[in-house]
Amino acid sequence: MSQAFILYSSEGCHLCEQALELCYGQLDPGKIKVVDIVDDDDLVALYGVHIPVLERLTDGQKLFWPFTAQQIGELI
Image 1 (cartoon, one colour):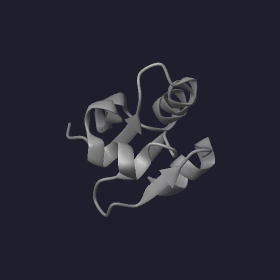
Image 2 (image 1 turned 30 degrees about the vertical axis):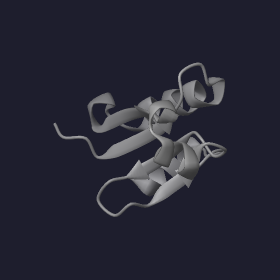
Image 3 (image 1 turned 120 degrees about the vertical axis):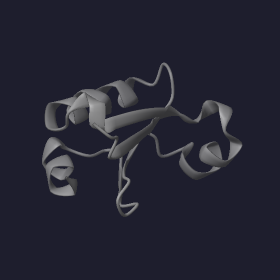
Image 4 (image 1 turned 45 degrees about the vertical axis):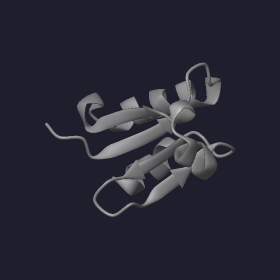
């Protein structure tokens, strides 16, 4: 099963943990790749104040926190 979504996140981020739980409620965990932005300056610049961010890989569509289970369902 290939990954279809990326969740941009950071270790220790409680909002990111909440977002991941929401994602797992809507998506097969094998379809989500969690990317910690901390070690990538470009990702920090893009998402540092916005994490968590869920991206659909087929077209780059993104959900910025706060998002709901319904919004994830619509993104799917």
